[in-house]
Length: 177
Image 1 (cartoon, helix red, strand yellow):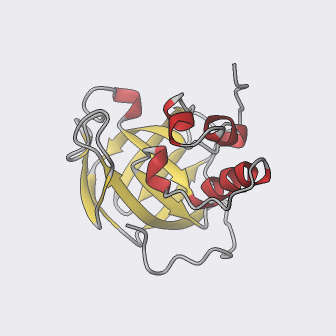
Image 2 (cartoon, rainbow, N blue to C red; image 1 turned 90 degrees about the vertical axis):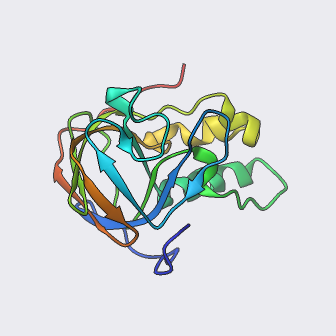
């Protein structure tokens, strides 16, 4: 589910944006379920998502719609097809719009009342190439694959919540192996 207020050509900010998608999956290899709101806890991440309670530094994953579109443009340049893959193919929990996500460990984000700490760049796995050949490589540059976060303060989030960068350390980039 993507918020009805999403506009593809909206400007991008370095300090605040909007939550336009929330998704979870109850187990490995099952499709993502999009929801309009969800509970995030420090113990389990997004309620109903199987990963949050297993990985303390990957309780919540976040991706920006602008980064997803940039990856699809790169893929379209190497293909004869017009690509319109849903963002849930990436298997991220949260989708933002209008915010350039920080590309640094230790950055702090607030989504509604929830506070998240960026733990790592979310590196795309081989399952991305199973969804579409070349997607893994297209998602890798500039942290396009998103962020892996731990939950500092839990709460309820909803589509159209404001997403704010509270702390933005110097940026870092990892190279694709």
